[in-house]
Image 1 (cartoon, rainbow, N blue to C red):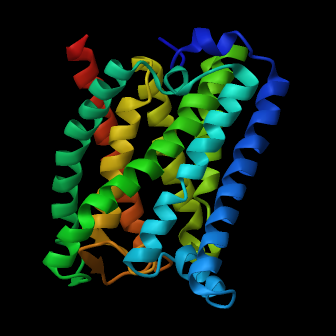
Image 2: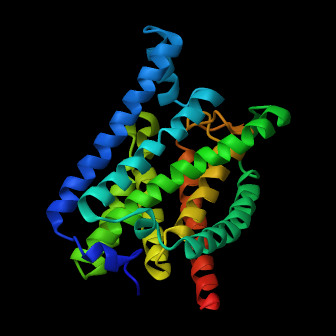
Length: 292
């Protein structure tokens, strides 16, 4: 099993102190990019309105704020590339995988996960009521930018957690018990938000960690982040562009549900989501086995 994308490149500079410096560097570059956005908004809207815009971005209030939030993840991409380049001498394809294989794996992830997520969504709609969020015309007009924003957001997370963190840990520690669960747990922790999710925060952490474990496995078996990225992109497109919870980034969704993130009934939906995630992972593993 290949531990991660281009692990040989990661081994050239695998001292743990480099990774220990790399993660703060990623966050620092990301913070600088957000500060740059604040400066641009201040110039465009004035010093008072900028705080209102940031509140809207934080809650993904409306299409414009949601798109801004998604594109802020370009700063995470820049931070990961900075850490990879400055501390490990690794370029973007050292982190993500060879371009042709990356594109092939991305297509596989989208092609397998997309239909299965649509089927799961269809079954889920039998249990909940939905309301229109945007007219079809506006939704279609926003769709290209929304998909691009989601590609940036999911690609940034895969590049950081699987392409950088997982591969550098694999280059330093031979045991998969280190380089598979640790990035997955950090990925889950990044989705832990008790302020918004209430009693469902732990379930959401578990669901995100489960996805992180599966994404780590798929990355290890392909040597690129492509399959995990395609899976991640299809999942977020279903949850944010088709039917979204009313308090969980609904700004670009065609429909919203009648249940909120912290509602007790949402726990059942999270468990069903974890089951869907498991089925998709199994289907992707089967597709990879058939591909050879």
